[in-house]
Length: 153
Image: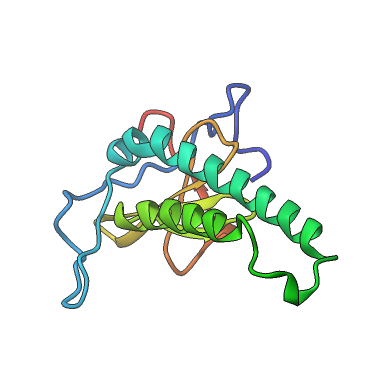
C-alpha cells in the first residue's frame, strides 16, 4: 500500500492494531483452526520464511526439470527426480498446513496466519520478501484489503 510504510519498512503512524483474543475462539465442529496473535505469528515467521524459500527453490527446480524434459519421449520412462521434488514440495506445504498457515499464492509467497479480534476473524498477512508481518485483513477482504499493523502493536 503506497504511503503506509516509513523508511524502516514498517507501516506508518496511524496504522491499525487489532486486539486479538486468546487462541480459543473460532473453531468449527469439523476442524480445529489454529488462531494466532500477532506475537505468535511473528515468532513462527523465521521457520515459515525458510519453508517458503525452500518451496520457491523447489518450484524453480521443477520448472528447470520441465524445460529439460520437454525433449524426452514418453517411452523414455518416468520423470527422474520429479517424484522427489514433488515429495519435498508436498512436505513443506503440509508443514505449513499443519501449523494452520494459509498459503494464498505460492508464486508470490503470500500466506496468512489466521487470528481473531473483537470484531471477528482476521488474517495476519505476510508476503515473502517483507521484513516482518506488517499487514492484516479480514478473510473476505483478501490481499487487496490489507491494512498496516501499528508499529506498537
